[in-house]
Amino acid sequence: MSVLLETQGLTKRFGGLTAVNGVSLTVRRGEVLGLLGPNGSGKTTLMNLISGALKSSEGALLINGKDMTGAPPHRIAKSGVARTFQLVKILPSLTLEENVMVPAAFGPDRLWGRALKAQVAECLDMVGLHARAGQQASELTYIDQKRLELARALASAPKLLLLDEWLAGLNPTELHEGIRLIRELEQTGITIIMVEHIMDAVRALCPRCAVMNSGTLIADGPTDQVLSDPHVVAAYLGEEDA
Amino acid sequence: MRYLLAVLALAALATLPMVFGDYGTGMLVGLAGYVTLATSWAMFSGPTRYISLATVAFFGVGAYTVAVLNEVLPYPLVLLAAAGIGATMALLVGLSTLRLAGIYFVIFSFGLAELVRQLITWFEVNVTGTLGRYIFLDLEAKHIFWQLLALGAATLALSAWIRRSRLGLALRVIGDDETVAAHSGINLARTKLVLFVASATIITLVGAIQAPRWVYVEPSIVFNPTVSFLTVIMALLGGATRLWGPLCGAVPLFLLFEWLSARFPDHFSILLGLMFMAVVYALPDGVLAALEKFRSKGNGNSATKPAKEANA
Image 1 (spheres, rainbow over the protein chains, first blue to last red):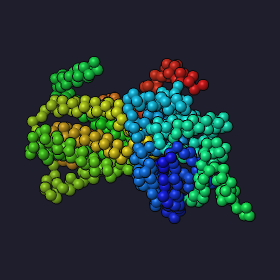
Image 2: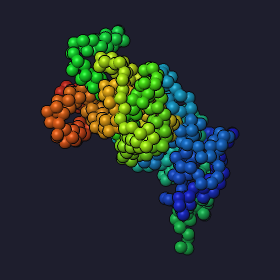
Image 3: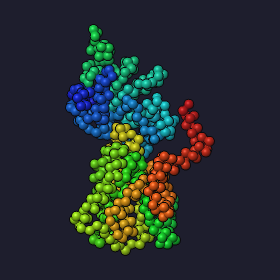
Image 4: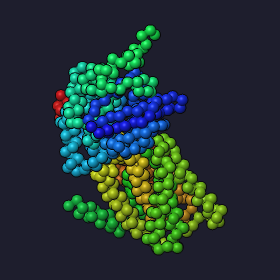
């Protein structure tokens, strides 16, 4: 398996606060990586650095072998990276169909016309929203907004999908459904990095996990091993004698 | 068929000066001017929701270009020069300001008109030593009307084309959420800049084409901020996100303002302000959207039912 994403000593400072501190991570094509860590440990900041929403203060970002350090988000999107947001972001004044159309039309393949329509239909179908393609996105419930966001992320046929707590806030039935959806995705060979707090989902979906604490990477390896690592346990639950 | 209708409609409009006489043709010039201004303003500001009060900055530059060059260059070249100057100015302004968000852009755009006016005044007083210029062009009102008619039709055609193109989709996404737009592969800066330049170039041309109507031109005449405000209120009244919205707002408001400024010349600004507030509060999405909503209510919710069934 070839390397799809590589970060070399990626660092992000906000004034005096170092949110991400020298993170070096390698993700191979087809891998599904769970990114864990307590609140405020820098997971979302790392996702923002990878998607180009933030520019790193130090370090390098390589996507598909190309140096993307400091590239704006639209260039990173064009190189095959798609994401969802921790706080769901839909385009409320557009229809579902138009929402999904956007990354397909402006992403790596720049689809238009019939090819675009077909791609949009396929993605909406995948998340079960095809029957409502013409509806306004603002009318959707929370779970359906999450579905729509996933369909939109998939529309650009990304090589790397970044899911930022995509499963958060779902009830047990919806969670079950969400896990099934992501597992279906995994089978298509897509590479996924997912920030997730729900351990059942992490165990079910991610063969590999990386754990962050106060901006640094404290563990990276097979999920079972990582979750029983004493440093990881300490980061989540505090030191034993504390 | 639709093209044929459009051509017939244009031809019919072009004969209006023969019907209305001199006074009427003067009104037609103003009307065609504002329809074009509002439509080109909405081309950029409608989808992006950047409320620009810089309309008169470009409009005035267009008029001033004609005033300066009308005795030096042949008329078509004067128009070309105006378009070039307007586009260059829009490019510079756009590069430096389109990063500004919301209210800051509004304030900057308003300041821009004043800045340009003061610069020209300073230049005329200190360098050329004259304030005020004459425009001697052999153009009658009907000639000006025909030019504006052609420019207005071209603006509508361009707007219609943009709406169906990738560019139009990009603009709507930017209007909804810039973060999503950027993460979908849309180059925010370039998209906004292209539209801003296109819109400003048309506005500059309107000023250039209308300039001969004044004969005598000075900065306080051509940089009148009322032009900017009228353009905004017309586009908003009709609906800035719709193709025909600005036109539907410009026609009634222009006639209303003509009447008001003749009847109540001293209270005109107050009435304009009140109208502005009425439009923003009562019809935030414009008349066309309000009509549509009203009609779908009248149909006994039949339009919303299928959607609800699909929900279940």
